Length: 172
Image (cartoon, rainbow, N blue to C red; front, side):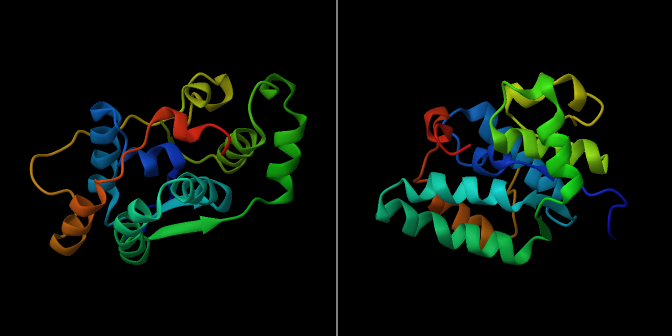
């Protein structure tokens, strides 16, 4: 069954599954556990940010990470979306968003324009007044595997790669 309003996630949630901070990692895993069988949405820009983080890593880490990411993107109903003209216009005209990067402005404008729920770990986005009605609390993590057996095995292998806050620098 498709949710009437598809929630949006950003790169912090997706990459959060591999974050060095156990709290961020568990919160992201709880999200994917709860939403694995449902639709979610990521913008092309946020997906590109994830790729930019991974491509900075060693080839060896990429090789252990990408099988997990490939299967997750294939098996889970992750809708990918570009930005429409209304989103671009809103992002450019919001003067109180001047402190945000272009990527964050576009994400905020997308959420506000389409009135979509947002899951993010990004503190600048979480503090943005315009996003307050759309920010969603993360579900609680349940005990046991997060993913189906094959994907869980790939996830465990991919955990060799760890993401730090610094990895998000210069990608968004």
